[in-house]
Length: 365
Image (cartoon, rainbow, N blue to C red):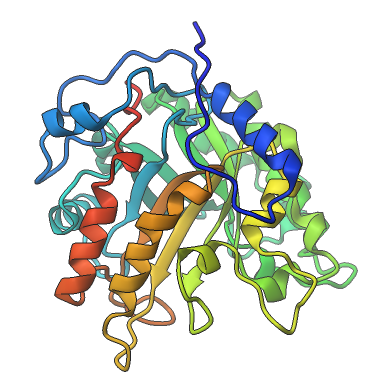
């Protein structure tokens, strides 16, 4: 059964005209009927937020597609307390208590021979969606992987997933590849090598029965890399990519949420911003902000609160964004991205997290 849905939110001025029709098609296709979750399992059934209150805010008829696209609003997610040494369960429990709601998406990271989802992750996935980042190897080149030299590892993972986990989940293969590119012949790490590696891994997993992975291609979201002549060659192809994603962080140039997801730089004047570029390049695909964070600035203690408040105002202007996943860490590579370092920041973040925009579509069961 399918239902037609109205497009929620507007396309900001200056966006390609074709994008509005594409987003309407994207959201209309997101109306595949899925049974509602059991009581307490939805995104609104969170620590500190009653399920009944969330149900009253939820528009009727909001559904989820097989590719996990919500027809109303967007998923709310978190990579909790990263680099603290806490287990996923402990980190998530603390983060959800701090932000006053349950996450719809839990973002976790794996590499090499690690098998996933782990027992702990599978337990957490009973009431959430998993977004799993996997780097198949930190030593073998992309060209090696594309040539089949890690096929035993891929097959072992496929057998594990088939045996222990049948629910749908998001899977990113080697996120943020831009700064790992070595643009010289024979390096094994050119942009084309990356695309071939990604395609090989996804195709092999599918051939071995992993049909529940919703694949995500995750870019860094930085204009300096997007301006590289090889940037377009990174994309593996529509048939092996279900969602496209960016990982933007609020540096000194970012003023608000709009300039976070649409970063531009004066030294790259031809770059339109990632959201604009993705609308034009991938008009039929949902966009995920797979990581985002605001760095602590001692000279500007209100910065986080201001940016979170802008996200609450502006998220409706970016209807192709269907998932927003915060990177919460006291020790991120470039600073402290915890959302509650000041009382004002916490209040603004909690208000954003509890917005009906992020609780309107129930999680699939």
